[in-house]
Image (cartoon, rainbow, N blue to C red; front, side):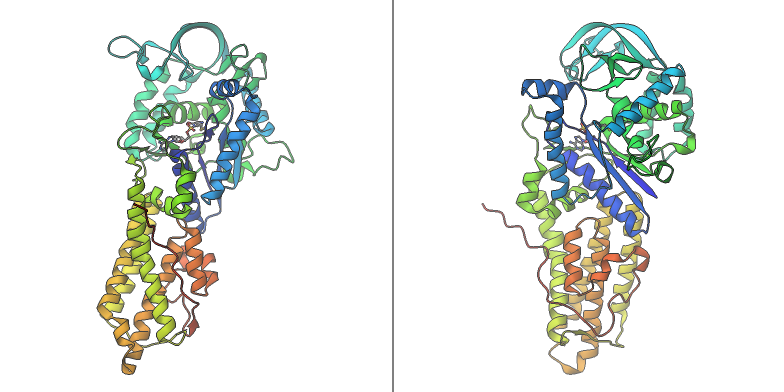
Amino acid sequence: MFYLTTAIDYTNGAPHIGHAYEKVLADVIARYRRLCGDEVYYLTGVDQHGQKVQQTAEKENVNPATFAQRNTKKFIKLWEKLDVQYDGWAETVDDRHKACVQKILTRLHTEGQIYKKQYKGYYSVRQEQFLTDKERGEDGNFGPEWGEVEERDEENYYFKLSEHAAWLRQYVEANDDFVIPSFRKAEVLNAIDRAADTDLCISRPKTRLRWGIELPFDSDYVTYVWFDALINYISFAGYLAEDGSNLPEFEKLWPANIHILGKDILVPSHSIYWPCMLHAIGFTDAQMPSLLVHGWWNIKGEKMSKSIGNVICPSALAEQFGPEALRYYMVRDIITGKDSNFDADRLVSIYNTELANDLGNLCNRALNMSKRSLSSIMEASAFDDDDCTALRQSLTQTIANYRESMDRYDTSSALAAINQHVSFCNGFAERNKPWELAKDEEQRPRLAAILYHMVESCAQLSVLLTPVTPEACTKIQHQLRLPDLADKKLADLQWGLIPADHEIGKPKPVFPRIQLDD
Ligand code: MSP
């Protein structure tokens, strides 16, 4: 089983392009693993508790549950619109999740991993955490990123993070695939030193925060952020689930092959707190998940933010350009792990060049000419030459490059590999000029072979591209009158998917050009 998760999105606002990218990236990887023949379980969802939700709900005069549910709907609608197909949906208000969180808390408290202490210190309201001297800037003050900072004095519960730091260091050092891409490993190792001397505050008094999961051993407190949110990866996978909970069998899913998350939540939550929490619960080294860390979409080099007013709404873009144009752009114009600039003009130009022009033209002319010149039948032909051999080699190479890239989660290179074969095919058409061959009856065997090579390429490319543009690929397969291609795995991509004498359907453009009004 290939079990993958994404971060669960905060419901204190509407989804933006960063949320959409992550869910589409996960969807593309999930669909790719299915093409590889794996059984896949894709979990995503929403992070509904917390101070921000409570505060925004108060401002809007609704209760936090209603407010969180209202925003949750926006996420669900967007995933439908973008054809993000997940198998499990995590909502942190779900009773099954709460029960799991409370069981874990009880156990860690009983075992002395959670204790209570008085803490006096500076607190960032914006980041919702206590600050130490390490968070001070060079001038000795807390920087603007912390927002309003106030002094607080309160009793809270702490998780003995520091007891697991030595184990974590050796684990991270010994396991190169814990964090993907590996260039982020140094960041994690640096952060471990900080964890070694600070335990993690995991509670908030209800006087300050009510909108959370109550501590099972002290009803004056709720648990805070990470002990709630991170546990979704196991609670919704069936960990400690009651009979009849309608959750998957945990042993079948765990360990997660990848948790997909953005670089901002790698340190400290996912790479420090999470493995230490799992370690404290008793998970072994072999039961640790891997983290696939993606970069950020920025706007003209700047972070997207409500205050700058440059937040991009994925739903509006999907309506304007089509969901598949957006999906394609989001996994094409960024290198997984790095940052990129979101640019709607580039979306249009990449879509128009790579899909409407290159692949779209290939499909149109291959299918149109076959339909017209070969009396609706893909004729068997014994004709072969070096150019045909080269085309078959190009396709084999493309499949290999595509797989190699997708196995590294490098969606952009995988699409570049597809485009390489598309270019080869278009050049092949230009060189062989089937429209000329069609005028000469003696050239019929060659014409049939040339068109076969082009149409067969379309068939195979429609399988390779399925994870990214599933609807368009289904259309191509229907035009080919080969709906069974939808069930093909990568291992089935052998030359000859189109049976000789096969009758293809009526071609119709599947990637209409995006026209922008001036
Ligand atoms: N709720 C926490 C995660 C808990 S996971 C147990 C959270 N939520 S979030 O809504 O702020 O972010 C959700 C995901 O979106 C994170 O992985 C985050 O990195 C990602 N992104 C947020 N802004 C982004 C961009 N501008 N670009 C790409 N992804 C970004 O953090």
